[in-house]
Image (cartoon, rainbow, N blue to C red; front, top):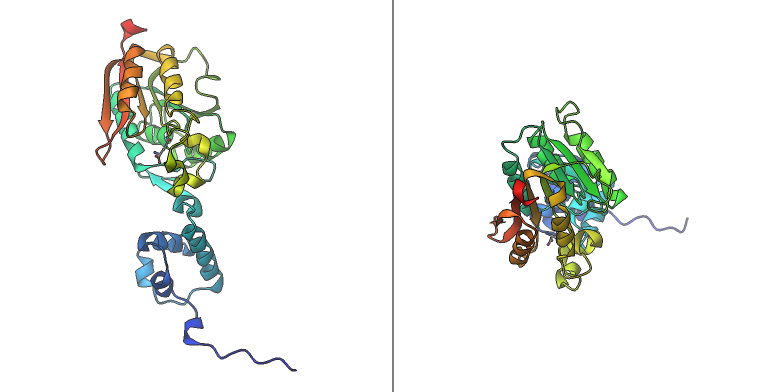
Length: 295
Ligand code: GLN
């Protein structure tokens, strides 16, 4: 009885529209559009064609919540639970490294290495989302692909990505997702035509670990808690006994590690050791071939 009636609706309290939310967003426009299309289940073009349509209150609240989390730094890929890599949409959780565009170079180089090898066997060490293994498997339906991780959380994500993105009838069969610390739990009799890895290669004290998306990604996927090269040393050391004749090993590494990685490969008996530059011009991956005589 003594309650005052609600204040009359001010025009700004009218149902929000996509246009209004995007205009008011503190985020870079592309990020705001990704979050909003995610919440609304719309295509990007519908933000234009339906831009002035009043939105449901629940959608607006969900969008505002995601926007607020992005403002304090949470990665867009984790907020929407997905990231595109090699033309495929991978599920992403906070338990896996977010696929990066520069890692597509590793996939392309591995595909070139197995080009003339029918039913090639490929091993991906530290698969995370499964992006590398699944992208290779999708491009080469005949290839048999193994993907390892020591994180069971990551393996669950990778297995879901493999099941969702690959043809169940592919001649090479399903990707074999295995719980393993590098080569540790792998059948020692297996020989691979190509071994690939995007291992944790950031040195423990690197300030980048405290910046951007990296703050929200699993630390074990980013750093070896040492000089940044210890995972690559273990991968290079174990590769020769796992490679078929003339098999190739390719690893991704940091912008300043190419020379050190090439030296590790040469010292372990690899031939044709070289690095490849990513689209930013950074020597981002290094690899070599294990000639039959070198095993
Ligand atoms: N490329 C990632 C980054 O620097 C690091 C990934 C990794 O350590 N493998 O953001």
